[in-house]
Length: 208
Image (tube, rainbow, N blue to C red; front, top):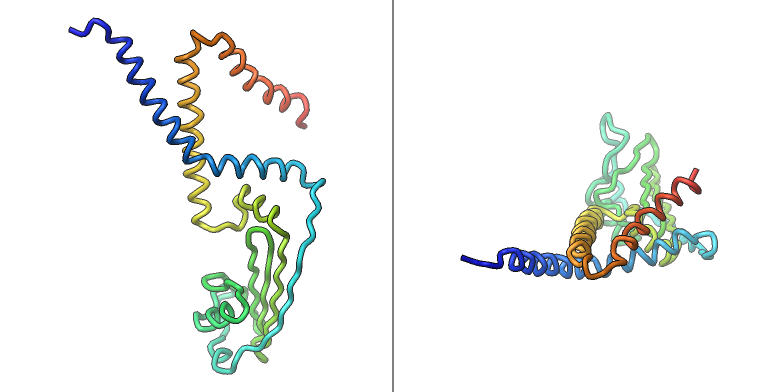
């Protein structure tokens, strides 16, 4: 019979927790660096100068492509026909495929927001004249939008969810490891307490 079950059990859990802790920290590394840096840029946005670059273009749909355009029966919002979207994407790099357009009797309008900027496109249904405007607010704005998940698409949304779960694993395994080592580190719980109390006090006293 095993005369030392407790030490062996402790060693097993220490090994397991350390393994989960380092794996989750490796998965979180780039995301945590990105979120830390963009947390600073978002919190100090008023001190960071940003100049938007606006690009405007006009073009004309070829007659065969224009003939593909027709107002959807009974619908005010619907995607562009695939040949039209393909021509616009190749000609303007506008990323219109699959995007919902707003249709009226004489015009099609697309709002094309994106991370770090904005864009819109309109098509005159009678003449086929296309107006396209794109706004680029720079890399800091792009990274800030990644932080917020603003106009970043489904893949990035999934990444944020997975990243959040990995952060939870990293934090909770770290907390349990602190508990297991607390007997040899007298400052453990005072430091954990400060980490909890300081943001709570700041929130209660200074956020209205």
